[in-house]
Length: 349
Ligand code: ATP
Ligand code: FE
Figure 1: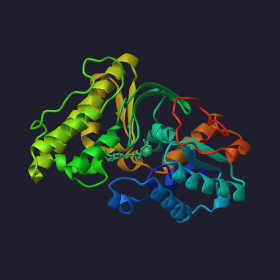
Figure 2 (figure 1 turned 90 degrees about the horizontal axis):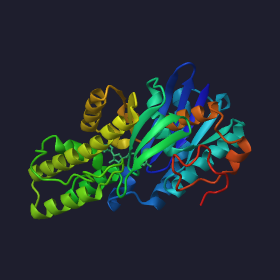
Figure 3 (figure 1 turned 180 degrees about the vertical axis):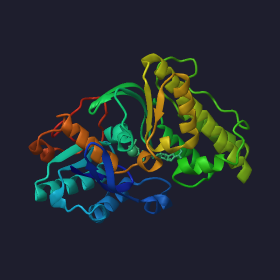
């Protein structure tokens, strides 16, 4: 079966083709970033993102089909992100997918972007459900028990910033480049993680929620006190922040592993490409007698291969809406993963 995926929820325009037999093969995964478009503004500008998606989705899609050497008529399924995200961009990608579906007669499956991250590990590994998922991305930080496609139970979420957002904001106020996550990881390699004292968010508080705003404030204060920052100051600050942020994620994840007794720990989302985080999660899983699995770096950050896989799995599980409902569906800027399995038809705002 050939599955086509489209992703446009933030600042990456992406398309992919999977070949699914008894295994999953990524025939193509094209990702066109917009870093240069947004760089002058120090963050993603929704209107610019929407225009860039609308301008480029056709070329990205064409390239993905060409690279895979699969003509549109040979596709068996089209999956596209229908939310959550910056609505203009989501609409650009989803409307393109609707058009392709109408023109070819290939069924369309609307996919929750977070479902894509949640199932992304399946692109490269055969992981049995249920598993404990640490979903750490630019807009979300959650611990979930993934029981199957369309079936996730949320244990905890961030009460303020997402982890990736904290990396991005912290990098910005330290004068490191964008995106912040990779910039901090790079700078931290040369830094002393114990030089600056950082708070330990929600320490002593039970539950599985996260908080990153205190860390961000601590970095701002330390940066002001040490100003003007030398390269070494920046490296030390990046290392101190990174260590504290990762310890926070690790502590909550360890507690959730203990609570659920999960046999497998999965990490997904852009922040899961951080090597130090991967190392810590591996240690924690080992300590709890669980296996640790995470997608390779290119499938942690946004891509359309994970959307194609999620669409396929939802379809196979009988959880995809009818073609009529899929074509009538309005994309949703907000769409929690654990709300219900199928998208609510016509309820887009
Ligand atoms: P969401 O999936 O919640 O809608 P998003 O799609 O924008 O958000 P992703 O593409 O999954 O998010 O991840 C991007 C985030 O990952 C950014 O905040 C980026 O800084 C962060 N990130 C990327 N690489 C790293 C890294 N090596 N270390 C830490 N953070 C990273
Ligand atoms: Fe994402």
